[in-house]
Figure (cartoon, rainbow over the protein chains, first blue to last red):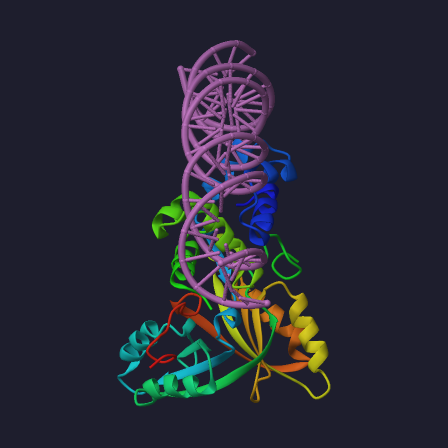
Length: 152
Length: 152
DNA sequence: AGTCTTGCCTAATTAAATAAGGTGAAGACG
DNA sequence: CGTCTTCACCTTATTTAATTAGGCAAGACT
């Protein structure tokens, strides 16, 4: 699937996607056109979904994050999903097995805003909210090479 | 905090962080050195945390994701946290208020791997696992400008 | 009023990305 | 068993972008 060079290129790009082809090339021992070609293929294959910037919510005034578990009332599932998608403060939402149909992440500037946002869903779903106190692991990609578990 | 030009630059970079300074410059009506300077300052201020690539877990064989709620047994909190951090399949972990001390995202290649991973925590914490069936909202940054809620 | 700072500009320089064309090894096939 | 094709890579030349240096104007500060 991925060879060792691909993995090394990805590791570097995850840390800094602005790394030049030249720099990438010498780190892995290829020429820059070869690196360019590999990257193009990683994108084509969908391994690299996007080149992007990571924004710090705190720096934007979003000092509070919460995990919200959402159980739409009977018949309200689709309306609830649409509603969530349209609220930009939801920074992530997963539809999961179990009673809590959705698990979502909410970015807010204050507890007041949290309350206001949850009110907008309150008549269509039950919610349980947990305020995030710390982030032991911030978003990171899955392992690129075999791990203790996936390849024992 | 951020002016309108900063926001427009960020919006473009979020979509594609490889956008050239020249391109950015003409999109917002500045010269490229000016854009370069603004980006530098956005980084210095910590608004832009990093330039990175988004990896597709599926393309790497991680076809399954789960949300795991973790309640460490008495006295095991730190050990559990350390354990989680060291398992690369955890792609995210938040420490939250409430009974479920941690809420984490797990990337796995199979149900079997999920089971093996949870076993490694089983003697130190209680866990509740929800398999992700769909992702109505994939990771996205908080809103850059005022919203209905945060500025009513 | 004078001067400092800030944010921007243009022009020149340096550096990087891309395009074109060639080489050699591995596997496919007559 | 040899030849042909494909593939991944290389180097070099060209194009394009980033950076540096220096200057200008507006608003803040003394």
